[in-house]
Length: 443
Ligand code: NDP
Image 1 (cartoon, rainbow, N blue to C red):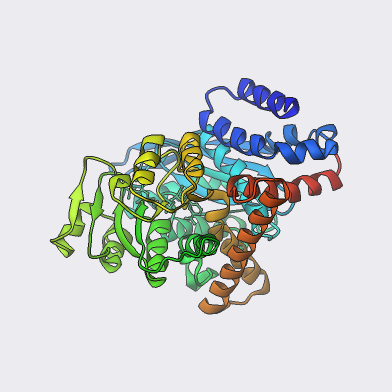
Image 2: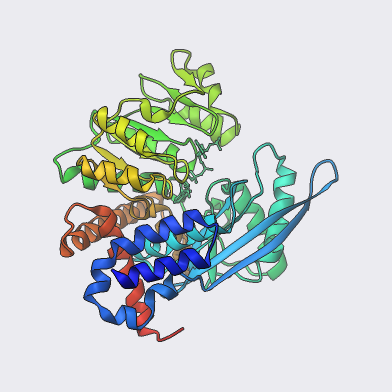
């Protein structure tokens, strides 16, 4: 379609070197073409041009002092992409691979994901090329305080509410929150993923992984399948992976493999999650330590986790981690369902291969939306000055994930792509934002 193609060509020309942003925009825009064609008002109002250009991108220096007394400097980013349906909302990523293109791809995806949750939250994302690995707690605090000393000018409970992502967990959110409070004097829900003693929500830590499994359960049920007795392989061993593994196990699945950025474990008896939590959440160590807990398990630094035969694969580490050859191996080994816990973990040709082979495929913006949905529930609790029970939050999360599944299935069917959840999720997420933008005029 020429409007979609023109916008994409322009975007690629105007944003050179931002390959992952190009990839994310191409996937979304190409799959919403049927809606754009059916509604000429979107083109007239320049909806796609406006949606693909962030409201603003804030870039800043983050100076901090390391344990040797030397000054270090990192890059800081916050991209406020779109607030048509609510305050900007999206995590902060701390990883050496972070650059403007990565933050824009994540912020762009976040617009549609947040829309799918049915909650009033816009899209944003931020982060830094700072690497928390191997840093002392004091160094992480120094970095977080410096980062917030600039960021506080742009965020607020009704403006922009950041959260965690890769490299940002409870420790970092605590340091960021403390600094925000110190500078502004405000005790407000400006961040989510907070500790339970200062405004955090029960079940937020578990939400992305649990939500992923709730959505997969709905999708499997369309084929008369469930997690019961299935072999599950999950990449990553961070926040999303650990709690996806926990819920998949609770639903009767057997998680046989996990990885980190150095290697992967294979445990035919089913992964010992208490050991993984001890290694990753408490000691912040490498997964190679797992053999100290389970001597019969295997640990590898060669090969890839996707070579392990499984029924259900859940990529929960990082973007573009699952390529065509991995998809082909998974298909050959009989995978029946793939759910993206990470953001854009599968390359476009891998997704195509899964869909062509009839594998159930849940795209990230639907599959991992449980995290941001529960963050929005944390915002609600902060505004109400109340704390809901774990069961209450978990029940709402479950209802939201079922709602997301139903929305994406219905949208795919309405536009003639029944069972294509990539198209369904993109269309369902897009329509709500686009209609809000139309209603609010040219802004
Ligand atoms: P964490 O930092 O807690 O964990 C990331 C995990 O993935 C770690 O085990 C890390 O290994 C591993 N990893 C990172 N890069 C690679 C790689 N190149 N190869 C193999 N393993 C790798 O992050 P999260 O679990 O929070 O986030 C994971 C993904 O989920 C990201 O794409 C994030 O954007 C997405 N997401 C997270 C949400 C959340 O609520 N946390 C919400 C929605 C999406 P190591 O331990 O070696 O660093």
